[in-house]
Image (cartoon, rainbow, N blue to C red; front, side, top):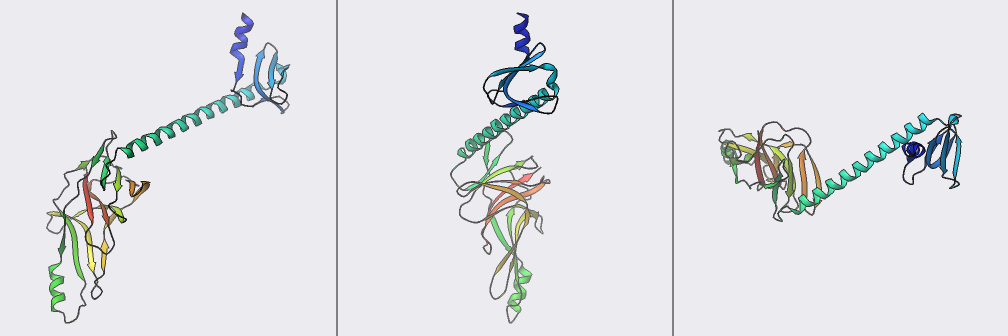
Length: 256
């Protein structure tokens, strides 16, 4: 009985993996399994497929067991990482399947709930002084100026995360950006874009305070978007637009 207790306690088996049984002279034997029995070490040779034995005093057990333990730990960590990755992929697929088919922006709250952002009503506000100068000039040399704005000093949709996650399903192939908004001159609305209209050719140059984001395409016209750095408290919007056009789609939110 004592022999079998010792045998069970000292068996090392790494499934069918080949391990190295190190000798004190620096060499090693490739084995599938080994057992310490009294003053002998019995091992299953990986090369010959037979049980053999060697005096225990010739084996560097400390080195062998250290490497075996490290290998087992690495295998366990890799297995856990694979399982975590598969779970994350499964969760992501389930999350994507839960998204509405309609174009728009969808916020993923800390519990994983999908919350749609409302499309804001926007308006273009022109610079009246510039318009007057252009009208008085005999030739069109003055650039027109305007802003695209949304009403209200703060969005009704508020989040607390500093790096929120969104899904953006585009209505068509256009640019999308996360933009920080600023108060308009009368402080009764928020400016999304500043527009410069080039005279003669009437080309429109768009300026926005763009927040850098990571984005990953997860479907046709569907992207996951999140800030690369912590977003400060303030007013923001996810904007879908085409350069040179004045009709962006704006989904605003407040970061508290």
